[in-house]
Length: 203
Image (cartoon, rainbow, N blue to C red; front, side, top):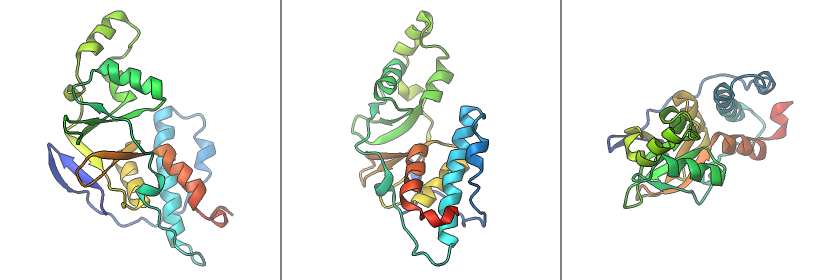
């Protein structure tokens, strides 16, 4: 199944792209140790994507098809679009994650919010004045009308490709009613890389 792109509620398939002929750059993991966190995130996503692509080009191994349902974190925690920025921030801190699917009153996905999004809106949640602002602003006010998602049967390599192209760190996984049932993050990609890619590829 393809990646799904939704813009202002209009749903279409994300444009397909042929896999580029690159080799996995394993050394980039060590090289990124001192890079800023956003740059490390981009490199992690790119590394996972390139390693999966390399695996498909290797001869002598049976191709391993890994789907979103094999790696996604499920069930997924969500917050309604009428929730406040403060509620989203506190939920992220409590659960220890950095991305939160935002849903409608009917439970369908309407957006995604990250800790970076919240910090751009309210730079310091510890300042009392900022806290007041965050407690009154709703998630519906800040979520982007452009939304990327996938289904449980989407190939994980396609998800990795889109994450790298779009510079995003998480993709929500939806059922046929467009309700979130899971989420794929950069960490999930790297964990999947460790579990599903033959060790011979790294030698």
